[in-house]
Image 1 (cartoon, helix red, strand yellow):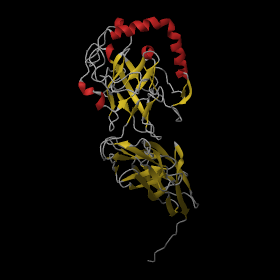
Image 2: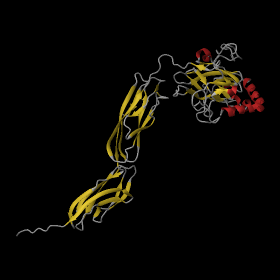
Image 3: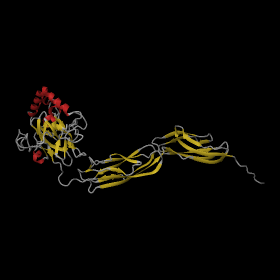
Length: 468
């Protein structure tokens, strides 16, 4: 994606005059009055970024790296030189704030007012939680102030498009959900700047925007500012790289592991199906902490962890619980009392902690009923037994019982109408008509795999004579 857009900018020579007119128009529109609270000495980001179109962008008015620096210390300089400015990242929340400065397009607000289009909520720019390799992606948008009507860089009302060439001032820091440009991936080196072999994004996979490297304590990667600003390289060379110490002052915030409920009870679950329930894992520790750990199922014969099982990478922040989903698969044979233990850990708590939780469930037939044994019955006489049919399914059962022999009948009829989770008693009459065995399976007409074993035999009667 970067190569395609680099070629695109090389092809913009034909429209360079219009871009220069736009830059001059923005410069002549006046600079916002930035309060002294944004003084560079109070910020934790410094250095320079490079735009292919508008040149160097400074992140702190204290920036200076010797005679070769793109800009020397300008803090305290009177207007029209830039007023004191600087960019900062909150070490606890990761939120950006403050202002950068470009001699071409003026101030760039790192905590702009949301416009509901590019940025829908404040803050518009923040660092994500640390990934598995410790890097943190810069997510969201920053905005060039001079496209706005307000002189103090507030609000979102824009100047006329005729004065801006149609640019809305937004600069996108990364592209997790491709919008524009569609899904870029940072290049491995800076060959586009004539510095072949100079690597800055050695991670695999490479990032899709600006990211913070905790090893070098530097920002790296690219932002995208439309055809006006183009690609913005946040680490244009080793001598003028944007950097920040994002280590919070004082002791690091400590997470606390909390898990609910006490146990998961799947109850009766149909065989050959699965059912899922979840534990809620919360971090009730210090604000700014991230709980890390994992959920381990000790016996996976019938239970497995299927979602949210590993939270050792990004971690769980305070106020945003994570669901750990356990799935029960009772198998093909009914069985009661299936149990296991789930160990949920907090590996970075002080000291490391764990919560041991029990999980239990039963495997049952969706529709069940015990067989009936009528024993021996004299031919022509009758015997009644009760057939209890249980519907463990999630839908109602409406069906008819089909008998193995005509000598078996239902009272008042053989219709069953059983709501989900309920049972129904059916009276079965056995009236043998011959001396023989009447063993067979009754079944449900629309579910012939559901059977009920009937056993019975017709026997001859015995005549007794009573003495007078």
